[in-house]
Image 1 (cartoon, one colour):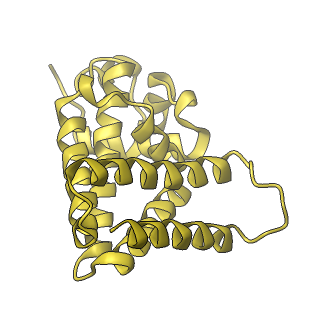
Image 2 (cartoon, rainbow, N blue to C red):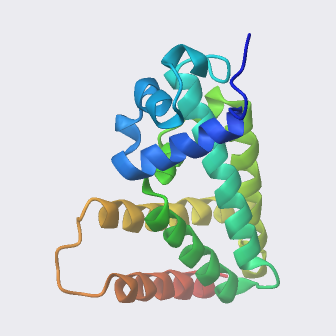
Length: 188
């Protein structure tokens, strides 16, 4: 296999993420990626095994960035401060990288060991910031599902222009997060 000088998997994923952010994940094709990179489509097969493999790799690429971003956001914080910081970072990522974020939630972690690895890391961050609430293992997992649903719901609705009322998005999010936190505090 002859590889184009300067083209490696990382370069390919960066370009794919840019395309996904610009046009949406569903519009990411090998042809469009090849054009962006200035290569012929068959050259991409030196780095990925087709579009499903590219999307899986893109999901892992996304999750690695999301884990790093969230980990940095919660370092030295706990409880409410950590949850609010995590939430803010999560939504900022979804806003800044819409196509990459789409890869995050449209990939089945059970089909990719790399995605599963980063998923586990993300889960562990959530678990650690919820420890001060003393919820127990099962309730912590329920809480993580609820918080992720809340964050994804806000991100998804915002991306799809689902909030049509003249209320500030961030004020609504802050209100709902504070209500969520009050529920955690009363349940702990």
